[in-house]
Length: 324
Image (cartoon, rainbow, N blue to C red; front, side, top):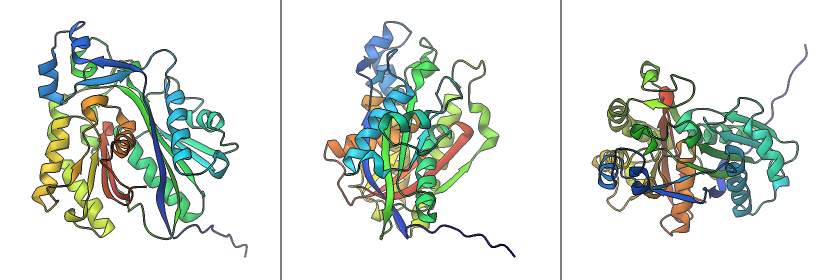
């Protein structure tokens, strides 16, 4: 009888390095007020955003992913030749083929890499991180470049204040590699398909969301997912040094942090608030927030970080990681 073999990889994985990229153009709330019925205080009160970045014609999902990915590889102390797989989480490429990952791999210098795109909307980075970790542990890959990159301004009606005030452009990346000690915990993921119509693209051109429905869902259902990720990793809320939820809305971020503190998270737990200056960048928001917090000295190597993404689908995922 013919027998097959399976590959065997590392006993565990960790994030080796991170990086991020944003367009140069800063768009303030006052800028938006000049083209729609809104104002700075109204936006700050509802979503907590003060400014965001909008890409120009030269900024694409691929170009921002390349910049963020190259920075993550450099931060990991590796060269592109050390990476053998590229995953690009996104939901905003303008065409389904060719995929972004193949283009990014070639432009970053990861020759002949396995590459694919992953679409779990705003949960995409967490989904991709879990996939990359499992690939390294099973021996399917050795080191994986994981990128969340979005140009949401391509799918937002620029004068629709329900979406145009929220969404923005950017990319965040991480290199996942082998480790003797666990640096990426098990993923807690799932979907709420009964709510799929709350975030859609009904005309195939512009994103639509039922803001209040999504807000209620996120503020009640996401903290339990974060707690489940902690349980799977064998940790308690008090073990968390840094909470990095998807940067959807500052009020949602604060609600999740409050619920975790009610369950035992420390008062000094650092909470990501990149939404204030970066807006909602979907799959890019978690790695970009981590990189910005690292640069600002708010996150340190060895910190226990709890990541949780959520968005269209409605998809959600969370895991615990050790910061590189």
